[in-house]
Image (tube, helix red, strand yellow):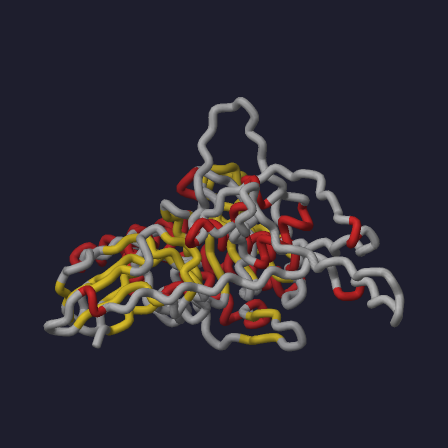
Length: 434
């Protein structure tokens, strides 16, 4: 009997994904452990492995399909001796019931017994110019109505040409004509800020290309918007003299050369932030509404730029790991991130983040907190600057570091204590190897 292959949940929070690429075709024989497809989640592109062996009888979801729900039947695998004809055809998905265009509260009451007035006919679902019903998700219908967008003017990018939320940005808003039966209906309430669609962009005559957003870019946009809207940020900046840290790094790299280890400045800063969070536990927290989560370990999420956006692989227990261990882990994590091969446990979680843009010559910046974390450290470039040492003016290598703190969970004084601890560790770096 054919084996059903369903869209897997590749992370605890995954609800849908993009079937980016099939690596097999109908008729191919596969064994347990073979890679069948590449699936794009909101964080990475991951491989889908075969558990059973057999022949690919039927591919039911073509590559490039977006919004494929977890549990959706995507292919059929046959056992020895079965043919493709044995695979059942995929069941047709029932069309979602159109939501009524008139709120119940606005529906006219039935006429009194014996009255001659005929109740108005119920609102009909949206139809195209030829009379066929327009296929659209319930959410797309609601948002189109609120924004005055004519669904018949859109081309759907969902399965079977179905109009989905992402397609609304392609339609020009048109004045909505209210039917006489709903003239007294109240205006729809505005959508919450976090779900409001941005206004469609009209590029005019400027040469341009419309690039479809990846699931990762959509998630970045949503999460950063929510962070700035919901998390009150407080920013604290310190200048840090790096000469001692750079000298120690050079000495350590000379001693580690025979082991093939080369420490980066970022490796030392990850360790410094981990130790600082343990020294100032009031900053190693997450705001949970009516609770405050206090972490006993410093798991540092490190921002890594990849072609499709940004991902934050995690160095767990950074406060207790050796610098060489942190260096090796970061090289492996960064390589996996750029190849889109990170596993969920390697990027989900973290108690605080570190983002370093010093390699681009950025002197100072303020990073956006990655909820539910309570803080993120933004690292600028180390540069030669005039610096007062004792009572004398000298030339020193100095960098600026800015901590962004969730003010709901972390008081300014505690954030200042963390920045002080971080500065002292960087300027007296022997504490990182003790």
